Every structure is written in structure tokens, then in C-alpha cells.
Length: 336
Image (cartoon, rainbow, N blue to C red; front, side):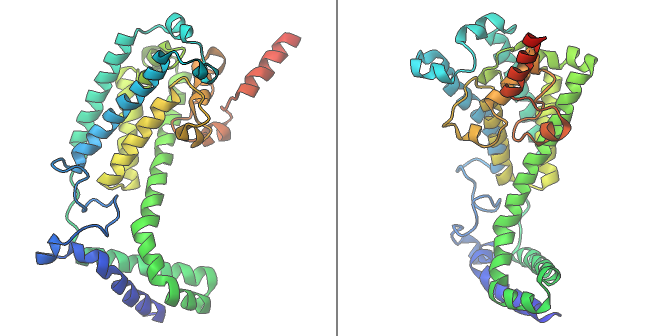
């Protein structure tokens, strides 16, 4: 075996003692679990008495109505200082939208029931991971790190690096680096699924008329109308897309809780009707409430298909539209 591997695995085993002892069988299983990262499924449940799987099912529903009620409170507050942040006047919601609030609420409740049933059938409690399995996975990762280091910087430099940093880097990759990549990859997968299906529903007349036109009855979006869809569209576009992203990215149940809650909050925020400079979800990327509002207007209905996180597919495939693009188009119309 290449010498740094032995040293790396030896150091790695020592570094693992603190964390992996909590996976040991027998008396050690009762030791505190505070050293295990919060996302890891074998730590105790986040809420006592409720499994993390149940929490993963409840998280998007709770997130949806919590966020929606917050923005609904802003809508009803009458605070004048909010006017400069409203994308549309309140009267537009009442006069231009074709669906009543009761229609919207009922449709969202149906979608929540469907997505909860899908999640209940799909998600399972994570299997118990033994100390030996944890050690084996770490050793496989260590060998991969050695191979990568030799390929990038050569034998001598990789030996020096691995002897000093190898164990720490392996441990960081195992507990944080790879899980973080998995989560970001799940966001990319969900965006990809939704972009191409969303675009198809606009370019195919049958799909638009029978399904997606329901969502566009809200010409002026608002928060609790974010999931106002035809039930079949809601199942395929949102619920199935989230499940596929979770599966293909290999997320743990704890990571899945965050994915479901985060994507729900982002979707609600994208329909909130406010362009808020202090909203962290609107600072997350260019795909925000103002960006998606353009898509709900007649001028932009064939643009801005990306949702809910990034705008790369719109940019790469030429379907991105900004407020500046709209102004430029209007000026051209006036001059012709």
C-alpha cells in the first residue's frame, strides 16, 4: 500500500474515535451524540417523540403556511412604508386575478395532501450504521483522496500534504464537504426538472390549456397562491420533482427535511408580491419575486421559466427576461 495511505488511515482512525464511538454497539450506544453533525440521521430525532421522517412530511406544509400567513399579514397591515416594495397595487390582486382566495386555498390543501401521501410512501427511516461501516466508508474516501492528491500535485507534494492534513481533510469531506455538495446538487436537479417541464407546459398548447393555465389564473401572484395548480401538475412538477432530487442526490432524511422546507419557503417567497431588499431568500439568487412576477405578466409569459432557485437555464437557453428588457421592448414599440 502507498505509504501516505497507511499514515492517513491511521490518523483518520484516531480522528474518528470521538465521532464513531457513538455508532458502537453495547454500552457505548448510550453516550451523548453531540459530536455528530446535526444533519446526520443517526443523531436523536430533532423533535422528541416524532421521527425525522414525519418531520420531513410536515416541514413543507408548516413552512408554506407560516410564510404565507406572514406575507398575508403584510398585505393586510396597511403599512404605507411597504408600498414602495409592492410589485403590484393591492387592488390589482382583486381586479385581475381569476381565482378566488377560497379556490386557491382549497387547491393548495389538495396538493399538500397529495405530496404528504407521496412522501409517506417514499421516505423511510435510515438504516442503522455501524462503527465498522463508518470506518469502511472513511477508508474508501481516504484512498480516493490519496489518488486525487497524487494526480493533482504529484507523489512528493501529496505525501507531505497528506501526512499533515490528510486525516482532517478526509474527516471534513466525509461529514461536511460531500453532504454540502449533495444538497447543492439536489437544488440543481430540482431546478432542472422544473425548468424543462415548466417550459413544456407553456410551449405545448394542450398541456397549457388543460393544466398550467390554472396557475396563471393568478395574473398578480401572492404568497399563499404559490402552489395554486392543477392537482396533476402540482404532483408532477413540484412533489415528484422534490422526491427525485432527494433520491438522485442521495440525501439523508435530515437533509431532506431542509430541502423540502427550503424549497417551499423559496417558492412562497417567489410569489409573495414584494421586492424586499432585506429578504435573504430574494438575495439568494436573481430568481426572486420580481423575476417570477415577469413570468406571470403577458409580456413575459414565454420567459423566466426557471424556478425556484437559480436562473442558469433561462440564461443559457435564451428565455431570460428582465425589467430592462421590458422597457427596451416598450421603447421600440413606441418608436415604430
